[in-house]
View 1: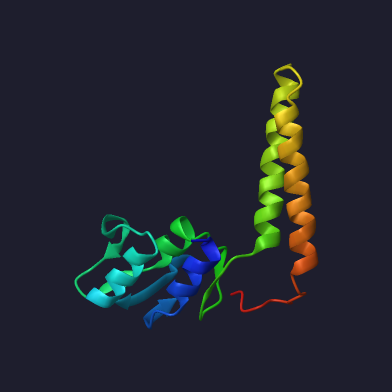
View 2: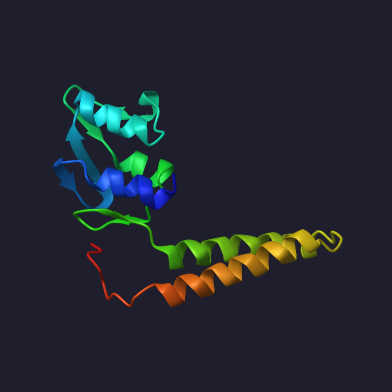
Amino acid sequence: MTYQEKLDVLNKLEVIHSESGDDLCVLVAKTKHNIDTLQSIGIPKEKLMITDDFIDIVPVAFEQCGASYYTGSKFVIDRVNDAIHDLQDGLNEYWNDVRDKKTHRPDLFAELDASAKNLSQAIEETPLRINEGRQ
């Protein structure tokens, strides 16, 4: 199951309460149905932030489902931003190798090439949205 498929399931849960900003929380009712739904997308019960009445699905969305941000009504993956971070990580690894005088690594060049192509594809496939629900 892809991250997007997991987020699609997560975004269908009925939100009881949410807060944005530094205290971001998105609460759903602590019900057997919601716990079963989360487990059906591969989230073990011990990874859930459960209180007496609620489940905070923010950690699940970001850590287990690849969400980039919460719009106030749904979790979203920002493919362009994620691709930029992947490319940046690869470039940092490359420059660390140069700094440490490590030998030429063809696998790293292949990873950088794949990351650059992924970024290009993400940009091409992403419609321009100005401030789409970001808070």
